[in-house]
Amino acid sequence: MEFLRQLVFYLAFALLGFTITEIYLRANKLWKRKHEKAVAESISIAAMFLSIVQRIVFSSNYLFASQWQGFIEETLYLSIGTFSVLVGIELWIPGERHKGVFTLLKREARTGERSKFF
Image 1: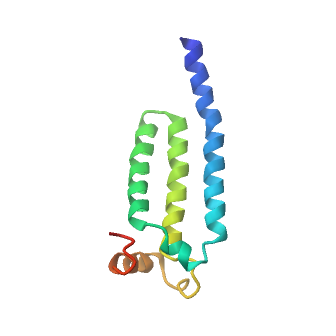
Image 2: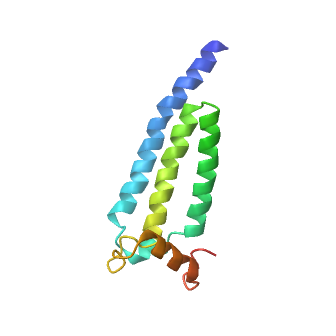
Image 3: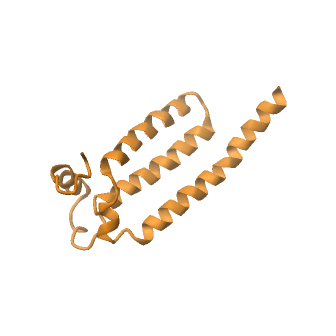
């Protein structure tokens, strides 16, 4: 039983490589097209915020339980979720760059035309 436990422990750390690769591929695809308004409009800010809240709770749980593989994985997903929110609020769209992050977030919360929040 101890052998199986150790095997799963090391496999979990090894599989973090797949998670890192997945996060990199998502971020790379998004990074190349972050200046396009259609890409920013396609991101649901509400879904990303729900994901961020979920990831914070799970990463805190893993941290307190000293489960480092889960903590690292959730933190990585938290970073791509945060990046998606920044793209979704049009932070890199020409003409919007001079505005602050909180100004863009407030605008996204107010506008109902794109219904990104609700």
